[in-house]
Amino acid sequence: QLHIVESGGGLVQAGGSLRLSCAVLGRAMIGAMGWFRQAPGKEREFVAAISWSATSTNYADSVKGRFTISRDTAKITVSLQMNSLKPDDTAVYYCAVDRYIRSSLMTDSATYTNWGQGTQVTVSS
Image (cartoon, rainbow, N blue to C red; front, side, top):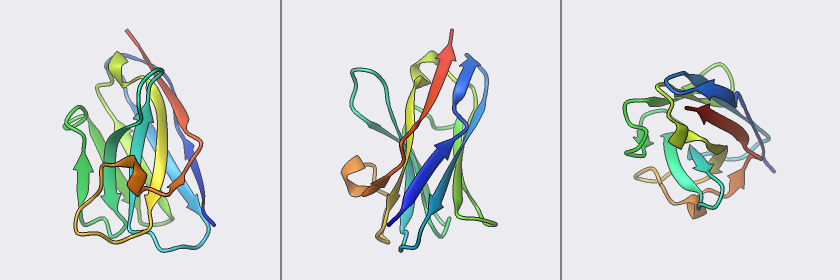
C-alpha cells in the first residue's frame, strides 16, 4: 500500500554533512516516520523519529545535537539532516512508517510496518 524511497546517501569525510530524504508514495494513515540504520553485523538501530503532525521528535543519544529530522510541509517527505558525521555513523539508513498515532514516538523497529530499501551512508576517517 505504501512505497517508501530513501535518497541522499553517499560517501563523506568525517565531520561532513549529508541530508537524507524519505518520500512516501501511496495512501494510508501515518502516525509517525522514523529513521533507522544498520551497520554490517549489527542489528537495526533507531536514529530519529517525527510525528506526522511534526509536533514531536525523538533522537537516539548517539545522534543528538548532530542530526535533525524534519517534515517537508510541501510534500509527503521527511528529511534527516546529518552534521558532524563520524565513521560510526556508517550504515544503511532506512526510513519507516508507523501507521498509528501514539502518545510517544517509538524507537522499536517492530513498531514500524512499512520500510524503504535503504540508502548507504559511508563516513571515512
